[in-house]
Length: 423
Image 1 (cartoon, rainbow, N blue to C red):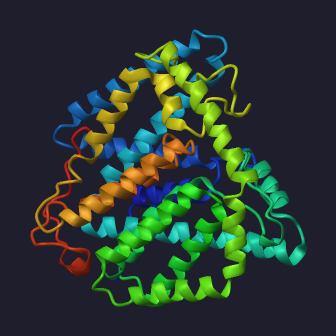
Image 2: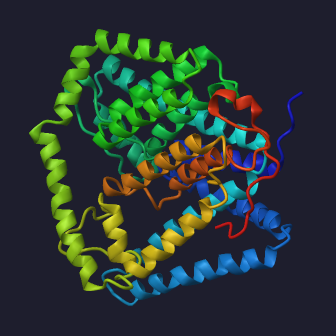
């Protein structure tokens, strides 16, 4: 008998779906994310109030919010940055709160399994939407760029796209940074998640196609790495041979198209332009950092002579360096402390799960590395990535029995990781 979901679980699931599938919070001027976020935040505060150290938790939350307000006020005093100060402050706080939601609500084995499955299914739906757009473009002759522009207008956000002629067009969604982690989870934990072989093969194929059409070299590498890592950890699952055989067969059938697509991405015209953009960003942002190395220039600040985009000038492709310029060494140290604090209970590296948890740590490193290529580390969507990695790491913590991906049914959590310092 299926257990009935609580109100907070329904809100949480809807929030995860919105973060993953919607390019932005607003749809036709209606901000769906904030409509769900407010009651979900109230539910999370109620859960937090029931904790034995709730006063400590609330004090920690308020302290973090107040500390980051220092950088918001700093840029508010500068006319060039004032308009974007609260925008980035909102990005930081919603990311931290999203991570907290996962930690407060996904608290036992059944909820962890449900959360991982939700992320997998939602990402699969996003991949299907991409394929529908490509097929619609082929059938009607409407360019992918035109379709993406219409979607951008609906959600009031600028999505990245490039026309690829007969090959379709580039389709990169904000949630695409989830693709490698989800692929790893499907390959590594298929049996524990009770995903059938046919469904698993279908999802893997969807993710590979979706990753290919992101037209992102970094995502290609991360996806390939996640696939190799997932297959290695679940080497006792003989169905992995089917994945490899199917991928090889598809690659051989469509080798000409694949070669054209990959060759185009690495051509001087495209790769050179992307690399040159990062070269000037690195040069400008390095100087930007050294102008205020300790505290940075404040939230929403940017290099006045090198504006990446008028609609969001502080969001650079080389986000890690941009954050260093905005928050300085002290701010980056605070981010590092928050990151370590969030994962310190999840990564126990106990006997029997060391290899698995080290693999999850590599997936976390690959996600953080994306901050050198895309502004993806401090947006509300990124909380899903942080949360999913946290949950996957927690599967190897506090277990009664020796655990490995191949023996996933042996997972037995004695207690969920502590919610100490839950932001």
